[in-house]
Length: 209
Image 1 (cartoon, helix red, strand yellow):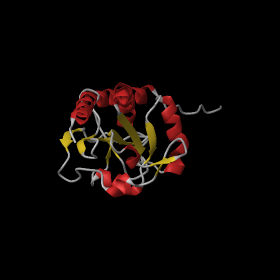
Image 2 (cartoon, helix red, strand yellow):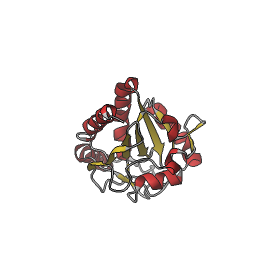
Image 3 (cartoon, rainbow, N blue to C red):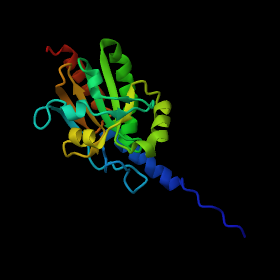
Image 4 (cartoon, rainbow, N blue to C red):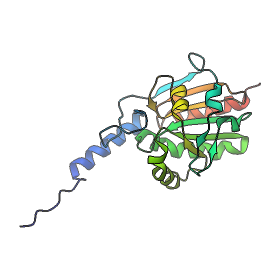
């Protein structure tokens, strides 16, 4: 008698996965970056809840030269530096394709980009993954989520400097025209993060030099 192959998506697993997604959608969460690789489990870590937006100043209150002038690889195949956006309000987002909360956040970032780009706001998504290993995955992600803002890979130095010892993703930084980090967000909540990001962008646009 031929043994039937075991199905991965059993009713029990489907129910459990659905419950986890509902919990993440309600409470919000973040993933442990673990440098450039996902956790050993196939399910992204959802162990920590998003932190409230924090005014910059405690550790890193502006983008240092090693971050501004670091040449990073773009998903389009070219290269860029954050200094290319000097003089503009910028939202920098650290993320990864395997991170569940990052996947939930991306459509909200796309909406914000459409809303604020005409007002001079630039958005840059920096994957924390290894560029060569994740090149196809990142490009597929960009197409699947209709990402129309700049996407590339953070160099190890840029990632370490921006994370300031906190390896959770997603992380977002709202930066003023003068290069000051106005607000930093760690984690993502579907209920609270989008309006907080919108408010921070409005504050950055209104900030005087």
